[in-house]
Image (cartoon, rainbow, N blue to C red; front, side, top):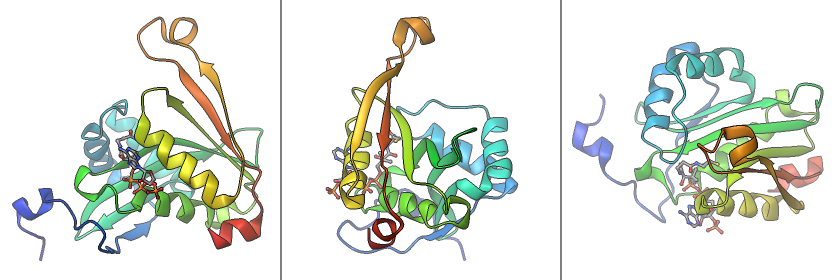
Length: 184
Ligand SMILES: CC(C)(COP(=O)(O)OP(=O)(O)OC[C@H]1O[C@@H](n2cnc3c(N)ncnc32)[C@H](O)[C@@H]1OP(=O)(O)O)[C@@H](O)C(=O)NCCC(=O)NCCS
């Protein structure tokens, strides 16, 4: 039986382990993923069609966290074209009530453990200067992997965003080895 509506918005207990199901997305998850991303500022809200394509075409490298039938976590990612050893993390979203429980970190590790990521030795993502939670997540992840983290301005405010979006810094974590991945 699904939980009552008010229970869905209550924070999940901090410092208490919850065990959401981590799984590959399916096309039928697209609308719920779109809803979660919409509720996770400052993420850009993509079209629902974009999330649908991610759930369908990028299912092997994307991950959903499900708790009591609700999607409470999501990472969209893909292997960079012409860079088969690099996983690019597109968006990470954790429902507000589930934050601080280590869920984003667990989803990242879950992705790297996938067969589709067997050849991955580096991870890339882009982060704006002001997204503290994102910096904390990826710094923590790099430390857990024992891997270096490098950053440099990549998509720039004026050159690439016509002044409408803060500069996105390309963050590269790696290379990391197979034994490090398993131990993290
Ligand atoms: C960023 C986000 C995905 C983190 O999810 P999460 O499940 O709470 O992250 P975790 O619990 O795995 O935390 C990982 C590390 O980051 C730290 N962290 C998480 N949120 C933080 C915050 N707001 N400020 C400072 N540190 C934070 C945690 O303390 C943890 O480090 P620790 O293990 O040393 O304590 C989540 O806050 C979110 O969805 N934010 C809105 C969308 C967004 O900005 N996404 C960024 C995309 S990369």
